[in-house]
Amino acid sequence: MFQMTKLHAIRVLGLMVVAAVSILMLVMPGSDAMADSGGVRDMYRLYNPNSGEHFYTADGNERNSLVNVGWTYEGIGWRAPMKSSVPVYRLYNPNAGDHHYTMNSYERDSLVRSGWRYEGVGWYSSDTNRAYPLYRQYNPNARSGAHNYTLNRNEVTMLVKAGWKDEGLAWYGVGGDVAAPQPQYRRPSGGTYPNLGTIANLSIDVSIADQRVYVKSGSTVVYTLIASTGMNDATPRGTFRIGDRGGSFYNPSEGMGANYWVAFEPTNMYLFHSVPTDAAGRYIVSEGNKLGHPASHGCVRLSIPDAQWFYGQVPRGTVVNIH
Picture 1 (spheres, rainbow, N blue to C red):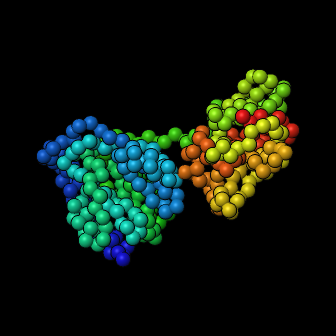
Picture 2: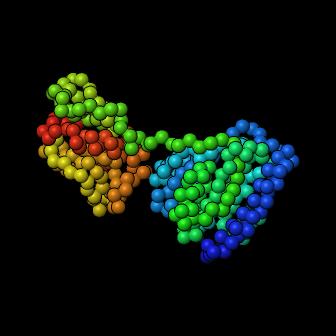
Picture 3: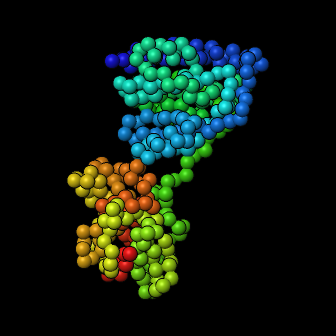
């Protein structure tokens, strides 16, 4: 198995070569055989909360596939040229489950000889633009996610204070970062919540066809919540009433729990609640991303803030119509 100490020695040696190349590029910006060409591409940054690895890709399909299996999309990390004379190579360590990126071919080849898989050119470093340098940091204690790459010097400073090693320049981009919007399961469905204490003839209408929960005053909808009802038509239809409620629960047989649960009677087997949590109480990203589509075992899932508001605002005894 590849030893991390040997890997780090290879990386440090590679970094010296990278630095030398970078200095040469700064001194002679017009000497490149091929300047940046063909436009720019967004470089997506993702985070695996289980392994601690950050991952970077220009492929939107790859980004979406990783989000669907639980990675967190953090937005556009930087913008890269479509083409230049300086490729950035992407490698994968099958033993550690880690990716590494370098524009140093010597470092690439050394890692391949040590058991890493070469996955090709991930993107390109700018030949001429020096306004967007990417910095590289190394965590000597990590097996996976051992390197981080960022435009943000404040992020570098924070990681170094936490024990990471500042390894300097990684490559150059041609544009800045853009943070990802909060995923729907972490946002209110429809803006400011109404105060249900002032609502007359309050009722809750759950549409399985729409995957929506309509909070109503008589026949008027006062707020709409995006929901996930049961797979395979598992959510019961009929007329119920709001019953007991609680802060959280966990079901070991399903390997999931939730927060802000509110039961509907007389079944008391089915609940309104947040998107699922794992055994440690962390929201399960892959389940959260299913919001708006049937996904539960019969309960009605809501976004985190929607569930908290519903838990705090809907009185016991309120009529619930599910159809």
